[in-house]
Image (tube, rainbow, N blue to C red; front, side, top):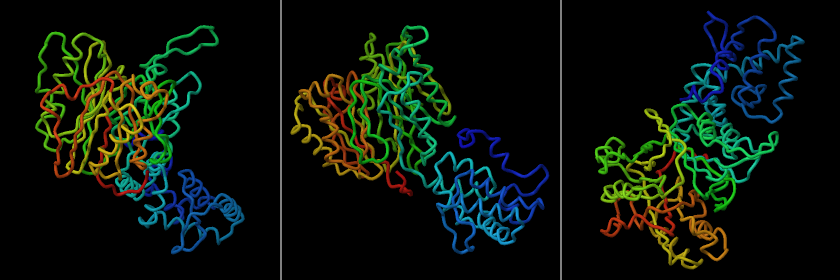
Length: 481
């Protein structure tokens, strides 16, 4: 996965020594005097700077630091080397020794790099590779990329935002959930040269998103009538309900100790009216004692038999001590995993994400049709708050009916997202407006304190409601947001 996430593998190979040489690290070679040329230390430093390192290499071995004036210092040192200055040679040798031998120093400097730059640096030598691996293992906080404003018509705003922000994120994603608005993801765009409108190809857009991510990354992509998203930058940013216009987000889940996240897909077989429940075991939804949360998304719900098929999926899972939440979407556009690659089709079905792990805690509340003002919306959030789910390393999901939003609340926008933020100011919120909701009032914690739904199976399927969900993924080793 890491090699596929690099821009080019040959970029890392170019940093090594000539064939037959023992040392591939440019700084170790400079400090040892390989090459014999006076310009070798300056060349090695330029290669180090290419990976984003900023350290003041003219300081002593015990006092290294990052210096904002490094470019000017590098130029002065390079001039001194070209003039034959011995002081610059000695300082470069000391700096090279530090970065070639002291793992503690290298690991601390690497910790400032975003993931893509970190993976490039891992190609330099064995020491840097091991330090990069240890650094990646500590990055277990969820990251996300959000797109809130439309731009040029060639690509969807989420494609541009993801291409830009992946250069900056500090996680290596293993599972990605992206959701975009259905209208512009596969809608119409104007072609000025031909003076006519042509339809944007949703398959091309989905493929463009998938190509930006690691090859072995699990990707689940959905398109819906509306989006609920927290802007990038901080988990305490105000979440937005975007019911019209171009928008989307991508949730980036890294490898988290004690947590397993996997995708699944059940498609309706037109030749068989009875669903084969052995497929639950294949998808990890049966005989899995660590299963805690299942997010379900039905697609092509307008087709004949779609509702009945959804019941066949939900009813067996409703008997488990797990959280079920989700809704009906327009369609799914991406579903890739390490062992499969499913393409959207004309049949109806269900896709989703399953979260397994003893440390996971979760809770859901249902905002029914009677919740129609600020007071009743906040009362529902108080029920969710009463579940006492830890808010650190926690994400929120909002699955709402397309008929709610500002129309339901008498032209007042962002009502439910604002109510959520009032009670959970540091928890990012994501979700969508769809064609039906899945969920109920339920709590699952580490002690299995479970408030069951009623015995009627239909309790999980709703219309004209909103389902709010909290998922806590346990403590993390890193503090990156």
